[in-house]
Image (cartoon, rainbow, N blue to C red):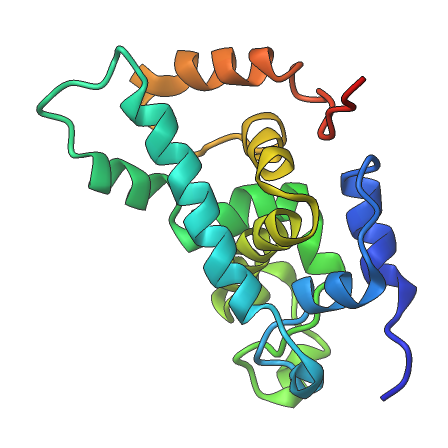
Length: 189
């Protein structure tokens, strides 16, 4: 196996400049199991872990909210907010994951080379980007720890699908962590 392309680590390091991703981790995060290179490792395990990480942080945010009513279906809120396609469309696109991740669309090979974005969306782009978003969170959790992953959750993600009643809670948490560009790593003095 040849050395992984530096594009993976460069892209993740540009999204999170305070974090320096190891080359192999960045390659795994941005390789979907559908790609032929997945035999050398892919993001399924990191995606599984990342999904649980972001679910836990969202459950904590909701459970601590004074806006949560006994009639609210917290499971449905989390499921809708963390829908893989929603994460992929909004956060995955904003993070530019589709430009660097390796995956194989569900299209015949001759259609892929001439495919436009609309066609790729129908071929699984948002789903694969959503898996990559979760893998990014899983990779951050594994490599940099729970505290850093918690900061990324609150400062680098806008939760689409989150009911309006909880937007103030999300903004407040983001502000407590220093805002949308707040520090991801806390230096202990």
